[in-house]
Image (cartoon, rainbow over all chains, first blue to last red; front, side, top):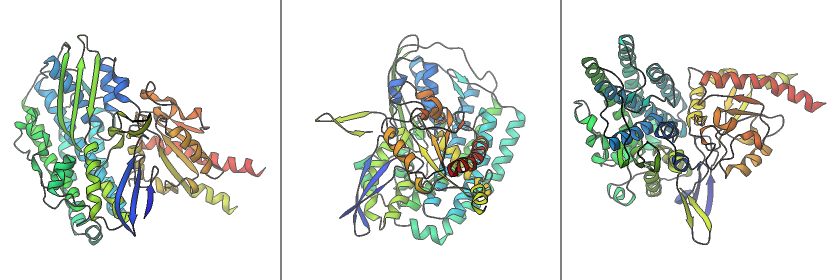
Amino acid sequence: MTTVPIGPIHPIFKEPLRIKLVLDGERPIDAEIEMGYVHRGIEKIMEGKHVHKGLYLAERVCGICSYVQSFTFIECVEKISKIEIPEKAKYLRILTCELERIHSHLLIIAMYCLSIEHETLGMWILNSRERIMDLLEMITGNRINTGYNILGGVRKDIDKEMITKIYNVLDKFEDEIKTIREAFETAPLVKLRSRDIGILKYFDIMKTRAVGPVARASGLENSDVRLRYKYYKELKTYKPVSRKEGDNFARNIVRFDEIEICIKMIREVLELYQEVGGPIREKCEIKGGEGENRFEAHRGELTYKMELTNHGFIKRIMIRTPTTMNLAAYRYMLKTCPTVADAVATYVSIDPCISCTEKTLYIVEDGKIKYIW
Amino acid sequence: MIKKFVRKRSIHLCVVNTGGCNGCDVEIVSCLAPRYDIEQYGIYVHNNPREADILVISGPTTLPWIDRVKELYEKVPEPKIVVAVGACALSGGIFKEGHVLGGIEKIIPVDVKIPGCPPRPSEIIEGILKSVHLLAEKEKRLKK
Ligand code: SF4
């Protein structure tokens, strides 16, 4: 039996992580994941800081899903202090969140295409992702780490010109994504490298608590937290998607499906936005207490749990991110990976985000640090 | 003569995330996209330190990386350039109080600095293109 270490620097990984694959011939039978390269102790830095500062730190838990992190953080604070945000701000938040979901999904599908050596499709997807980045920049002022949220609302309003531009770009983007999806579904290379590879069965979800698109591709439709989130209940176009197969192909198709629903949702939200008036931010006061907030990040369920003092200082904060659970599911997927290259592609297909995951320090007996998770 | 020409047109990058928030890495990936297209300048991202000319570093250098970055730096053949991308790599940025070293400059020499959190793809490309001239100069010095 041989072990093959992959990482921490690898052409496909955006982030440093080492996977040790145990091989039997060419077939991977087990994997050991070595982490700790991105542990910065972000929860510890947040403790004792004011909420306004914590907001910027929350954004930098992860750069790809930065808006969702700050969204969940600020909603948690508002839940604790019982602040109602104005209608306009609510729609603007949903709008930005769904735009970011599109960009995150496109990025990971592109990375998956690069990992199965279908570079043309990968580049194509990266190119149409730039349209969405433009919209994000127009609305919030920055491409990544936007700093758009603020206690009691959002920082900036959008005007009529912007709305027409969003509609125009979305129309073009919808056509593009249709062609891309068709290319992805019909390409023989994609079929060869992703169908029936890396299967996660429905019953294995119970063991690993997989969340997000990974769980939805295996048939667990209810894992979408947006179903139970207050803002999304009133949207008519929102409905969760799911597939039964649970292989690499299904995971990516679920993401394509979600992108389509996101586009519809953005249109609906813009219509609702135009009907309401009023300010985008309200004056408010922070009250102490503790509470938690869950939301569906692009990779799965995201939980913020925190305790605040009366003046808005963070006493203790706990962040639970989706990748922790999905990485546990990775070991079950390995059973249906015939080669090392497929194991790498499967790893990319679960959409790992390591900088989200590494927050708590685990010390194992005899004083030796074994896992930093 | 040929080498001089090739040095300008064939540059290999190795991107190392030393514990940043991914923001910078995502922007480096965006540089590959056809809109910015870093390959039109003859710059290829391979992520293999042994054949790299330029080491691109993003992130505040977490503790496990300290030794590894030094090792990596030695693996890169001469002449080599180090480009630090983002506020994190320059000074530790927002994570300065955490379990990080803060600033890659403390352990290896940095030639080009690109500030921003994260810098835009066009700024990253501009920074890398500026460092290409340094590469030729360094080689001249090496010959002497
Ligand atoms: S500089 Fe900013 S965007 Fe870049 S890794 Fe650091 S926190 Fe993230």
